[in-house]
Amino acid sequence: MRESPAIVPFDASHAAAVLDVIGAVFREYAMTFDPSGFDADLTDIRGSYLERGGRFWVLVDDGRVVGTVAVVPAGRGACEVKRLYLLPAYRGRGLGRALMERVFDWARMSGSGLVVAWSDARLVTSHVMYERLGFTRFGERTCDDIDRSREWGFRKELAP
Image 1 (tube, rainbow, N blue to C red):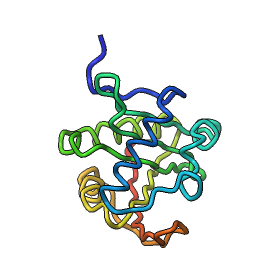
Image 2 (image 1 turned 120 degrees about the vertical axis):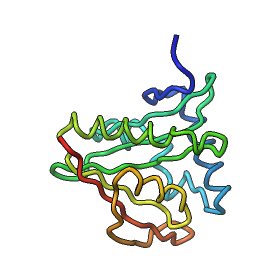
Image 3 (image 1 turned 30 degrees about the horizontal axis):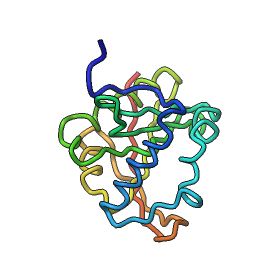
Image 4 (image 1 turned 90 degrees about the horizontal axis):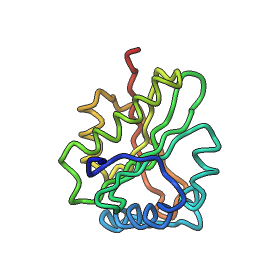
């Protein structure tokens, strides 16, 4: 019997729920969710993540997707965290950390000693979590999305 909530690899049956979860978080923070444009990677998770050598996991509670995280290779010895989102009722329970630990495990197994994350400046709680996990902030950029969102860069060197 599997513990709940559980982190499982994405499969096609999760596709609509992934859009629902991420769309809900975007609405919560008054961000524009654009799955036909800037966020189109989410309509082809297999092509955008899995076929590029990355991974995409979902957090499932009683059969319902409640969180997501992805990782992709980002050059020699590095990887990038993508799409880390949790529904509000699941925050503050160590589940974001658990999702990130899955990323760290994958990074180590794939030979990535550096993990990079870009996070919307509005997601302050996420930034606190990144810092608690040992990330340091290293930069800022403006996205080419509808909102011209500002993102902060975070990086963490992994111990072997």
